[in-house]
Length: 344
Ligand SMILES: *[C@@H]1O[C@H](CO)[C@@H](O)[C@H](O)[C@H]1NC(C)=O
Ligand SMILES: *[C@@H]1O[C@H](CO)[C@@H](O)[C@H](O)[C@H]1NC(C)=O
Ligand SMILES: *[C@@H]1O[C@H](CO)[C@@H](O)[C@H](O)[C@H]1NC(C)=O
Image (cartoon, rainbow, N blue to C red):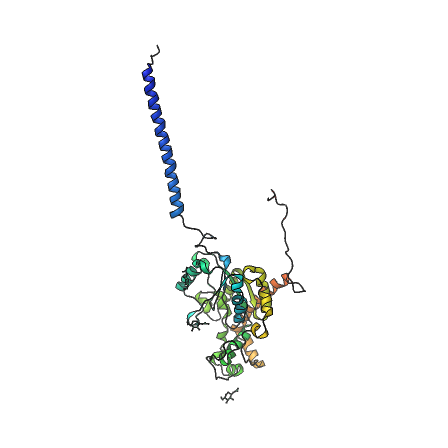
């Protein structure tokens, strides 16, 4: 037998049903709203603000160049003719990193402070930093390395330049009394008397600049330092030029870093003799055959020379693959094809 349903019972269940629906809609709206709030909260407060590379507030490693210049390699000429003359026109900042007491290897605390500053000082980006500092590895602090460039010189030439520079100064800061002014001893005499100023330990400079901040880098004659210097040159430097081919170095830099160095070669070529060789040691006496013999047999010289030859070969290899006889560069040697589906 079917139970009889009275009309008043129907009305009651309709009311209950409506209340249930209202409650469900209320909860659904509340749930959506809650979710929305949560998401907003997460994106605004709890998630770190990612930079261009996902590490560091606005740090873009492609917009920072570090030129850790080695003393007496022609670095002043290069820095002034290319970085300081062009920075305003090409819209970047040139910044000198002055190392206290000429200690070129940064300690670990200074490294952190330097890396922190370079990666967060967005007002100066794009930036070209230059200074007498050994290679600093940003990856140890969780950042990508900026673009490193450098220039090397034949190690005996470099030492001779340094030796006479301390005695006679140069045409750049005329009148500045150098630390050995008045001392007229030639390099030959110094070698003969085995004095400190021409000690072959003074040669140990380009290797540690490229080797970096490890303690073995400054150990004169360290085989490990030589290997590390080569490794860093290959893996962390975009370009390393040589002093005797400054114009070629500038020409190639302009090709690979046009944002910074657009117009650099024309500018360099337009400088008069005195500015193009902005800085040269006033008096340099060529070493005797006997001195050359002593230097060439020295193991420290041999290692520095090996590193220099290594760098020079790298540059010459790169150069020979892009330079044409008429002085221009080869056009682009690649193109794309078979793009599917087509890009509108
Ligand atoms: C580096 O700073 C010291 C101390 O302020 C100063 O005496 C020296 O001239 C600076 N070096 C250069 C190359 O400007
Ligand atoms: C970086 O160092 C310079 C010089 O000390 C300072 O003026 C600048 O505020 C620093 N930038 C940051 C982001 O710390
Ligand atoms: C260096 O100067 C001293 C005196 O000031 C002089 O006796 C000596 O001959 C000089 N040596 C050279 C190589 O000119």
